[in-house]
Length: 417
Image 1: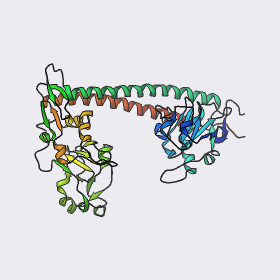
Image 2 (image 1 turned 180 degrees about the vertical axis):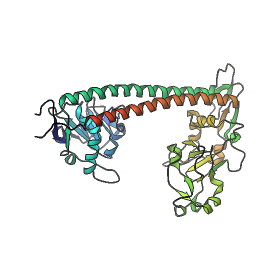
Image 3 (image 1 turned 90 degrees about the vertical axis):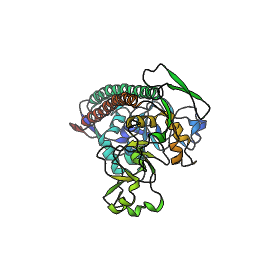
Image 4 (image 1 turned 135 degrees about the horizontal axis):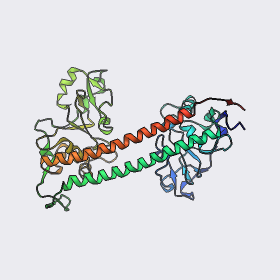
């Protein structure tokens, strides 16, 4: 073994061994703990959720507490974590058991999160659609690792950061739950009301709303122009053959789902744009996903690129004299409104948005415009507070990664066996 003060060159199989204990029928396993790729988050060493062996089939792998679960399929996502209890996992993972001697047990998972491991694994990765990595390919990768005392220092630092990250994640979860509860209350009960009236709903149930609110429909808050509520063009009106390298943007479903106006690179020329001008979206308009993952909403920001929607989107322009834009967005995202919107959708395997007529008839509870703005401002403040917490979490993860990489690239006094 090398000196306690030296660094040493090792192969990956000197640090851990691959465990391939299989179970053909997961339902026969003596555990209630299943980890699939979907239960691991990118660059997050903690397992915060799990499934049940009763819900899966086909061959799985057995693992024990302390072993590393590494997603070998789409491995570049860096989905790996140290198991805290025994269980079974997806066969799309590697189960790695650290070998103590050249490193302390918890050090191996840190090494695997480093850029050094990523760059070397990239050289032996196979496949393009779903890149996969095999034990035989990474087992002989060479790494220069620090001395045992330095490994302990790195672990102490990262554990402290991990504790802070965990506390921040818990705070974000509590804040998110509070915002959901508070928003639902504000959107149905308003601010400081003492007098309410009973309203009969379409499902024969009743609810109470503030006395000065009115029961209306979505049609009443849509803009006055003919194209204020419009589904994107179908069929031959917008073929892929019409797309050009630059021009007027064609907004897609992903723009609404990922709330990113920059997504996608489909464009049409000036002639086609004027032909499809009825489907134009402007600053302040809302676009809503219409097929598959339906009901996601995004507001086109100021200075956004001029363009049209495609057939997977619905656009809505709101009459700002009747409804505040932010209030509409929060109302649309609320649990009650989404339930009404989705209940009107049709299709089995692939859900599709309700018809324009159905959308217009969706009931809404409408406060005075002044109260709408007050409610919007409260929810905006809460969301801004959440965004600050999320930004802090990103910074903590970035700090962890930076410290890890810097501590693992100090190549001094290298010893080879």
